Length: 335
Image (cartoon, rainbow, N blue to C red; front, side):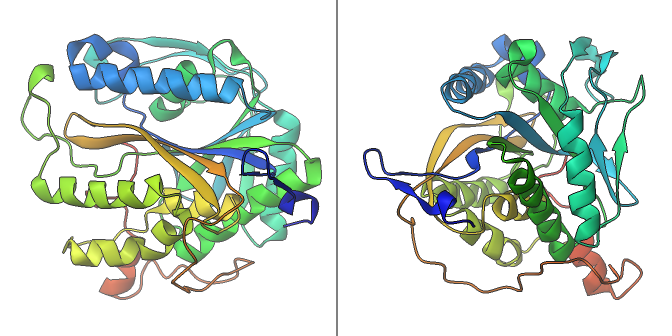
């Protein structure tokens, strides 16, 4: 972090940083297309309105989305189509209807980010062709917090095989690109907390978190995030999963990525705008603002890689496979 970024505003206790806002947002289409069918969904929709207002009053110049609904297999993909336009139908909830969209991407920043990824040893490419399917999560979030394309956007994919080290390096590459361009950004991880969908049809008015275990650990994560302890969430995610006795351990990639982009510390003011079930999943709307004082000193010290140079070992031992899987009720992944 440069000296300029460390300057503190003593008037409002806000720490000046290139990342002016960070968010964790859900991306299921119910919140855009049918929020009126459930009181909890309506609360989430109103919380999205608060995020939009928050963004509009910030000095963010670009919006960067890490979408767990956009899976990549080989390397990392970066949306670089200047004005992608299409009509989207969610592949699982197609009965909810169609979503026409037209967005504005920051193609120059996408190119800088691709280079920054490569400089840190990552394989990356930009995507620029008509008809490329932008994912449900990105569409829902952009429609709700960036109507009219007020801010230019960059969307990055979530590699399903990337481990903790690669995901952290990926986040650092985003920060590199911000430092190279000098742009101030709002960054968003699009994910659920618990991600178990109902396996039998459930009426919208009867929606609920899939299980009590999911509910317990969702609330624990929200407690940490509400205190601004983003790096602690990043460091402790695997332990949370062990305590919950989930058979396949996930990486909680959205939090690893978000913390890496935002500087890997607990220097944030956290705000949980809303938390409700959406078709069994734990949908939380959380905001993080750089603060002059840490919520708590860091207590954990997992490795902090700067470059990616290793085999991901996706064909390794069972435990290695578990550490890289995205098949978990707490994976934060898209549906």
